[in-house]
Amino acid sequence: MSVIAELEVAADSFELGRALAVPGRSDIRLEDVVPLGEDVVPLFWLHDPDPSDFVAEVEKRGEVEHLTVFEEMHDRTLYALQWDATGDRLLAAVHDLEGFLLSATGEGDTWTLQIRFPDHDALSAFADRCEDAGIDFEVCGLYNPTRPEAGPWYGLSDPQYETLLLARDRGYYDIPRRISTQDLADELGVSDQAVTERLRRAIRTLVDNTLRAPDYS
Image 1 (cartoon, rainbow, N blue to C red):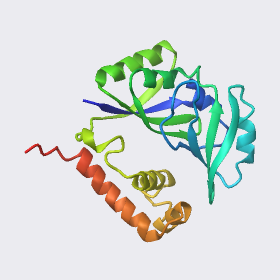
Image 2: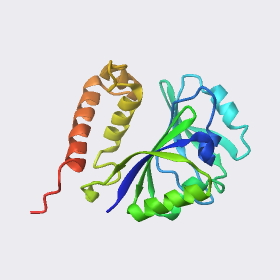
Image 3: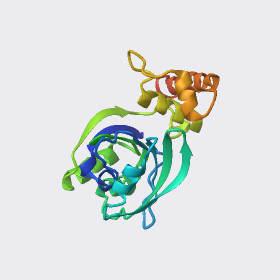
Image 4: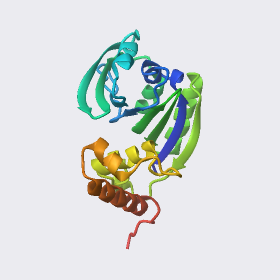
């Protein structure tokens, strides 16, 4: 059975983390799975109304060719990173062991990764590869999906996934709450009602695909 591992990794432990490490930035989120091979183009969101300093700093890195703007929305920008990923042993291990990077968020000096492995043996092999490479990480959680057919995001649609993750990152579920659904709606460019419905349906879908046992009758 597949297993999902949530890991905390120091930004300086892997090439992508080092490439995007800029002091004072804690708001980087990968948009999609990082492809591996000769042409690696990760897409990531930077939440910053004035990203010029960030771009200038990242483009100084030797492994980075340049950043390309894909989309701009309010206070965030979607970038494509043209870079040399041949030295990133963490992401290479994920690829070699048939893992699937579900999400990656840079928070200061630390990245939080969610990686889906085909089984626990693959996860153990990944840990061994990281140890050999001198990459330290902390396991924050392990999850066994009860409904494999639900897909990599437990059945969430792309809008539900984006809205739920943004709500979590922005403090919607904090106590006290740090952002409203209207604020989320403004950032996403949708209505307040759309945000509320996405969050409600996302939670219901997550419960159905993670906490309820499959009905094989």
